[in-house]
Image (tube, rainbow, N blue to C red; front, side, top):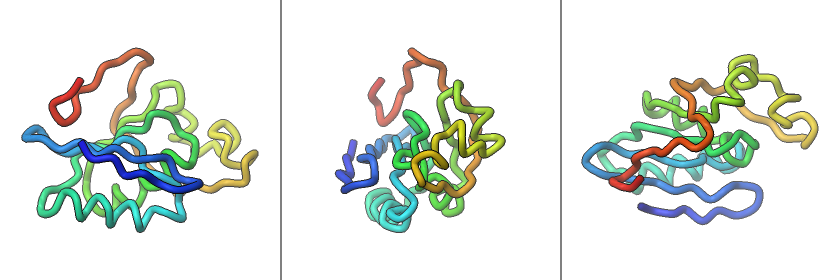
Length: 124
């Protein structure tokens, strides 16, 4: 487990790596997406990123998703309650418009229900 401590306005990122694969939890704000990509590339080396997990979808937690997805064909899990807003890129429901933030469109391959347990990097 590697923690990338980030400055304002990005959330911290947590990267998990194990024999089962690599996963990042939260991906930071749009203006920091290139830095997020560099941090992940330096940490995973020749490996690839297998999974993005978003704890919630404020822009400081998901704005790096699009660039990471363009770099690696990885799965992405988002909170189930926000799936329709992401699918429609509803900037009002996602609070991007109200907070003056932006988020490049990204996709998701699955959802996480409240109370779910994930196995990442050999941890539950």
